[in-house]
Image (cartoon, rainbow, N blue to C red):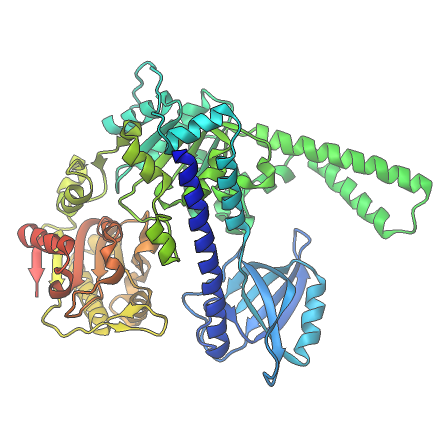
Length: 627
């Protein structure tokens, strides 16, 4: 009953998150109506541009943001997002009305957006409305993800198959995982812990976990394990929580010659992977030209005169042949692949209906909601998790759901309850040892070690790899912005000065100047927007602008740079640091640096929290503190 109770709790938490998500989107919409500059999820009013049919025979309409404000840099509009249209009379006397049909964002550039309409007649309706009122477009609440997760949890609760019940109760119940014994395998391109991880995956009967701290070669290990599994099983399923993560693992598999079919919305898939998508492989099938011709004949018959018996018989034969070809092409496209890749929610796609796999691999599993994992797990006999529960968790909007445990991932639960499943990758190939050591001791029990080739690597002999620039005595006041984020203008200016001075130092070595990459990170979106503006205005930084990335911690997940500068923002007497208390976020930020890490922040504010007090002491002893 423990496993069923756990799943029932997940159902409740997902329902809270769904309600909160819907309400937050509605509040954002209402704010945008009152203040047109708050337009991250809404453009109002809009003007209509050209319309056309695209290659998929979808009716596409171009719209332009017509308000006199800049498009929000935090815009939620992106290709693949569902949108809806709304309108009101020009005098604003009547409440806002929403059209029943909407569309999907195809492309967005500046103030222009192209939207494929669910119903072509919507365009005519919108043009008529615009004659007497104002029209807008907004992000639509997409219930699909919540529906998939809810149905997956319900199925996991009501399992009838003994085999699936055994897997469920091993993952979140009292059953202990089992392992078979196989001859020892050694892969020359892997280190000792990576080889151990692959061996453990091959021997696992129900579950294995690859715990990959920053820079330890998690993807390399996972790819080797997937390839070795394909030699034992006809086909496997590989998933991740985001399209970007799925694209990344797909690319690495394709580079190794693995036959991959990528399933998902083509608008959200990396263009480099397009030839490996289901749609492209379907269209490339040798029988597709016949199918295309039959579909055209069927359309012509439907568009013609009232069919005679002869025409009806012909239509019947064409429909039969069409169905035969569609099934044949579909099956052969999927059967020809060794690996099918998709997002966790995408595993519920109709294209995978009825398919079952021996092994499921879930990459970035610690960023995956448990409910989403179950959508894919129900299609497999065993599961391999890969990730790091000391890095960023899933994004949870509802505070009550977060407190209830929605951010506790399934991989995290398995790591805590079934340690025999877990292999820690213990050698990292990214960071100077001084940058690594604090994270190693705080998060990984001191078990991480730096590979010899990176342990003492620095940009130059004169350079210290670890620096804290203390702003405690500088009167740098933080502020709460209109978007409820936080910014610190004086600190932002200091960060850009530090970056500019450091870049200037590298100009003495032309090669160093040309090849060094820089990352500027802040936990707050408002500070990131401010930093981007200041960096963009700097003439000194202009020649190497392509080497500088400014983003949030979340935006830097999975990335690395030679030099990382972290703008901490918080500066107050109370020691209030908000979500900087989520130490996993700081772990991600610090471990993006290869050769130099610069922390900019107030020791008086930050060091009232034990983690930052110890970090301050570590930098004081092993690096350079500037005040």
